[in-house]
Each structure stands twice: as structure tokens, then as C-alpha cells.
Amino acid sequence: MKVKVIGAGLAGCEAAWHLVHEGIEVELYEMKPKKFSPAHSSESFAELVCSNSLKADRIENACGLLKEEMRLFGSIIMEAADAARVPAGGALAVDREVFSGYITEKIKKHPLVTVINDEVTEINPDEYTIIATGPLTSDALAEKIAEITGKESMYFYDAAAPIVTEESINRDKVFKAARYNRGTADYINCPMTKEEYTEFYNELTNAQTAPLREFENQKVFEGCMPVEVMAKRGFETLVFGPLKPVGLVNPKTGKDDAYAVVQLRQDNKEGTLYNLVGFQTNLKWGEQKRVFSMIPGLENAEFVRYGVMHRNTYLNSPGILNKYYQMTEHPKIFFAGQITGVEGYVESASSGILAGYNMARLLEGKPMYEPDAKTSIGSLVLYISSNAADRLQPMNANFGIIEGLNERIRKKADRYNKIALRALDIIKKQLEVN
Image (cartoon, rainbow, N blue to C red; front, side):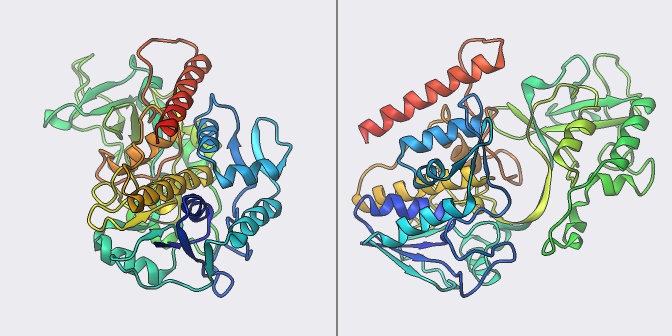
């Protein structure tokens, strides 16, 4: 049996590695060096484009936990990262050339891997295939993916609002209500006085923005304008837009006298995450933390993801992919990497592990790996495959999507440590059974 893996980024390499270790032959398609995406320049596999840091390395951080979980699965990415590690304090940073070279050599030399340097422009639903082409999928292949998943299923530019944890919102300053009391009170509302709004407005319109790369043309974002750009059109533009206060009565006061109201919308089924409605932004992450923390109720908010605006081809995965990274309509096709809606190098690689693992189980006629919401690797696929929002926003690993404990531990570091140890124990037991 043979599997076609499209894309030799971090996710594709993980998928291929797990397949060949199950004795399954892999055809690994990589369009480099014949054709490069606008962001890539190296001929090596698993190229790190933006940073040499794979983020935190301690298990009290959700991405650090994810890396430790990946090691339990025998991750080639983590093997390479440990071999290419450079000093970086509490983060896992690598020599990028050593990192990519290590993976490229391992993959290319494996007897069950055939590397085909060519662009894939067709998808056959009857072939066993893992699509791991990343956020810069070529236009021709993106069009074919749109055909098999549905024309409205793909997003080619990502303009995402920040997301905060529910537990970090100051409930004394906010209230739940629906506009004009229509339907259920699903939104958390953050009321602002004119003085609070004025201070917020001044900081927002003078905050530093992140530079867009050459291929990220700002014109594509006209349909979802950055909140800071909208604000610069006039002092009251936001008050008549996403921060309009009309129809929102504060049950604590019985009044609707707020000058502006920021609304937070539930982002996951469990209600542990909320996104800032209308706050698509291109502010630098540090500026987002500083300025958005001025919103009443968000003074101590924990941001599990910041707003981003960049070229990012990804699926609206709920209904398209199941909890195994497998297409529901075409079960021989799996997806992996940022195209699924996970965000970040480590998260992408982790999805490749499960896609490869589950493809192997499918071919062997065995039960697939059941993701557990108590783990970092499991919570990611459960989030992207069953998200409650109308439109999926790409998500990093974070403790907001990992199922919490049945006990209250006040100190966050201690709570996260206990969640992490529980997660690692769960995965060890699952892998022993499988």
C-alpha cells in the first residue's frame, strides 16, 4: 500500500515519518526547488521561515506540553529540534539550517520514501493522500482543494480577532446581554464611558502595527478592516460600528447609558474562550496586549491568541474534517498542518503526527487514535473539527482549549503543571494500548 503526502513542511514530514515507521510506502511530493512559495527560499524540508524559536519548552506552557506529547509519539521534528538546539533561555530555539538538514536527510534516506519534486495540481479522492501544503498552498492546488471541500470552505487571507480566556475576564465590570434582548444573552459586554473610550481611542490610533510582507497586499483585507484603520476614519466610527452601544441594557444598573460597548463572543463549545467581536487587527502583539487591556473587564485578560492579518490558506474545518484530520466526505484523504486551522510550527507538526498515525491505522484496519480533550495534541484537533463559531479562527495550543481539572488550584503555574502531567499520563497509556 502506498500513500501520497503532498508537502514536505513540518506537518508533511511528520506524516511521512509515521507512515514509513509502520512499513507503509510514501510518495512525498514537494514543489521546491522547481517552484518556491513567496515566503520560502531553502531547498530543504521543514523550512522554518519566520523564527528559529519553537516557543516555550516547559510543560506549564501549552506549547511546551505539546512538544513533550510529540516526543512520546516519536516525533521527527522534536528529534531534529533537540539535535539542532541553541541557547534560548526557556524557549526551544534551533539552528534553522541544522534543523531542516537533519529532517531532510532522514526523510530522503529512508528506503520507503520516494521524493517527487513537482507541484501537485490534481487531487484524486480515491487515492490515499495526506495534504500538508501549509498556509501558502499554491493557487492551482488551492483551487482543487476548494473543489473537493466546497467553494465556500476555504479562506485565503486570515484576519482574526484576539481571543481571551473566560476565567480572566473581570466579571465585576462586564455583563451578559443580547442586543434589544433578542434571543439568549450569549455575548459578554464591556461598557465604556466617554472618558474610557477617548483614552482607548487615542492609544489604539497611535499604536504600532506589524509590517506586512510583500506578498500580503493590504487590499485583500478590505472586507474585514483592521480595527485601528477603522478608528482612524473618525473618533466616532467605532461607536457606530463594532462598538455601538445601542440596545444593550446593563442588568446591574438597569441603564443603557454606555458610550461604547466592546462585545465578546463565545469561541468554543465549552465557553472557556471568547473573541473580541470586530477586532481584526494588524497591531503588534505587545501593542494588542497593552491597548486591549484598557477595555473595562479585560485589565488582566489572558490572550490565548492575538489578532493576525496575513496570507493564510486554511479550511473552515468543522464539517469537512473529523477528529482524526480525515475528510468526512472523502475518507481516503487527510489534511495536516496550518491548512487545517492549527496555528504555529509546533501545532502544525503535531497535526502531521496524528494524520500519519491515523492514515496508517486506516490502512491496517485498526481503530484510529482517539483524541482526548485533556491533552494538548487532542484538544487542537477537537477544536478545529468541532468549533462552535460560524467561521473557524486558526488556533495555537493553549490551556483554554484543554479540558480543565475537577478541582480548584489557585496558582496558575501549579494548575497548568497538574493538567500537563495528567495529559502526558493519558498519552502514555493510550500509546501502550495501541
